[in-house]
Amino acid sequence: MTDTLTQAPGKPCATFLDFPLALDLDRLDADIAILGIPFGMPYSPPEQANDQSRAPDAVRQVAMDVSYTLNHYDWDLGGPLLDNRDIKVVDCGNVTADAYDAALHYKRAEAAARKIVDAGAVVVTIGGDHGVPIPVMRALENHGPVTLVHVDAHLDWRHDVNGVTDGYSSPIRRASEMAWFGDIVQIGMRGIGSARQGEVDDARAYGCDIITAYELHDMGMQAVLDRIPDGGPYYLTVDADGLDPTIMPAVMAPTPGGVTWTQMHKLIHGLVKKGRVLGMDIVEIAPSYDVRDLTLVYAERLICNFIGATVRSGYYD
Image 1: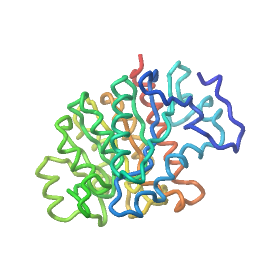
Image 2 (image 1 turned 30 degrees about the vertical axis):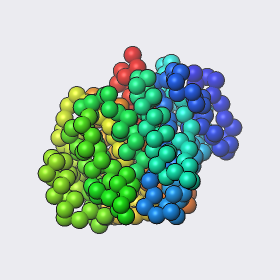
Image 3 (image 1 turned 120 degrees about the vertical axis):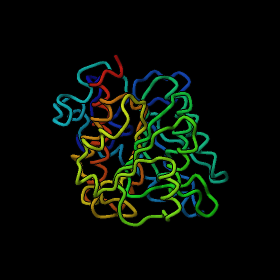
Image 4 (image 1 turned 135 degrees about the vertical axis):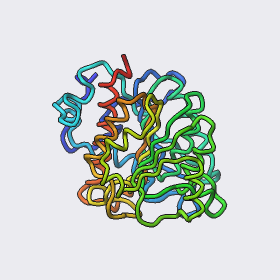
């Protein structure tokens, strides 16, 4: 596969790492599928299309030399990205929105993600705000009980904002209402977000294992991994503001003290080794706030580490 993929340095990618575009999901033949969901559920009309909706394509275009990424030795992984194996990675493009029906793109996103996971592929979603994992998590209905692992500065347990229940402040509460989700582990909480005491009480009453960033820094990521139930399956949702803003500055709510890169590396590789991860997402990137593409580079590295870890853990044998 990798022998046929070339790119001139400096040329923007049309798909993630120039992997084949696969738009016919009824005939999907893939081990890993990239899916862009640019639009969350807006709390007000101006939020329908915001800076974060540019992130899926911005992450795709950040790679400056695909041949290096695919074929050279990757020290994060211990070898080339796909480990010189015939792993089928495709990019399914972006879920489209309708200016006249704010909820339609969630229905389209759920249908797309359901076809991907039901076909046996691992789904990698690029958002968009943190509302976009909601339809993806709904698509996991036939694959539970799923343990949800959530990296974020914020709790995301609001029932609604302005009457909207599927927005970026609510994905973890929505997951808690899905019968196919069980344990929820939340990592990196810090600072001030939309959560009030009631949301914190509800999360704790559900049984969420809430690990603040400060607890993480004291105990280390291996101790966190030890607290995640063994066996899987898992779903990993990563809000960019969960990472420290020194490495992911392109977020709307930068908060000091976040998860470090080495901690994220350990989480991704450790979680994949514990059991099958059905999919992951990276959301809440606002490209115009970036500094020298730093956030986009880290996002690409995060996705590559996830792909490379799944390849080496026997998912596709």
